[in-house]
Image (cartoon, rainbow, N blue to C red; front, side, top):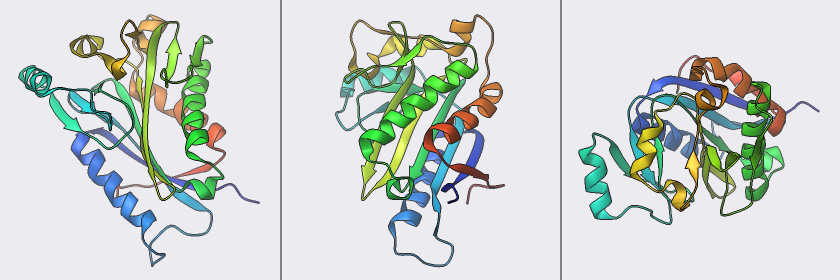
Length: 231
């Protein structure tokens, strides 16, 4: 039996708003009744990947940012957005690999909990491929992937009618000082790190992408099909 297919859409450096707009297109595409052009058969959805073009703070379903904090963060020159994902506040920006799988979990044989576990396993596998053996997932409320007591990959998802959105944010060469203005994911006493910091050299999103795609296909047991344009 062939593996489920997932369409890969690489946006390069993109505005966060453009990623959300494309995510909404794919959500509608998967949620409506089958029609010409809609995924069918063994297709399970799309993997949307980008490097954020500018600094963005996002809040989750549980909030995470007060009106005063939002004003302060915008004064730093960052965009601030509320999202429908799980979790609290986090940061997205240049040097970060941002991945939003929009998937019909039924076509992959997954449930929400196993989907989150697969995202964590994907990030752990990516770290292993780059020579970092100490990366690990931790139980809630420490969802994500950690190197020691520092989070290298944040995970927050949304799922409705078996269709997922949002996903993971992996720090490659992110300016980590942006995280100093919030309590990332609401976890007091923990820190953040990046691949560049851990490996003590510059690790770009472009360098990481091939290994990330290998890790994604391994953990989600799917085949990625590239699309030339995000449509």
